[in-house]
Image (cartoon, rainbow, N blue to C red; front, side, top):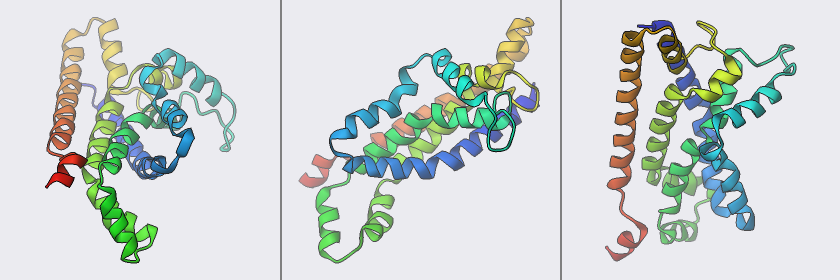
Length: 217
């Protein structure tokens, strides 16, 4: 069992979650007021879902190859794969939260505005608590997807042990070296994690009443 790869993947997933969730909440909330540009913004944010990992990885490789503000290239480093992970996970972090915000009954927001609450108070006291299902689902999906990401991470970070060699890359290496037992054990971990994440996500949204149901009650 490659514990270094497991710990590195957990570290990457946690940092990705900590950095992307607040911005995901903000972007998902702002998308409700994006106007005519909403479709284009949503399309741009959803690109990681449809672009081949090699294409996205290539552009990230080119973009991160130059010297950063730290004076060193970001490729083949943990910082580089963290940036790549943040970009790849944008749709997983934003779409569930956006759906949760959109499911909130507008009459609740209107009542809060009439009551004299500010936009920040409405967001903090009403919208955010009502969107907890989407936020939880986004967190679970982002965490699980980060653990299993392969193509983009490999192109940007390579396979440096303890630095960029995540679980998925370790599985690839073990298959290449005919270590089927090791590859099978690590694959089982990712399989179980993905199954639990999808079950939680489906369970959360399966129990969420639609806007029409709320109005009819």
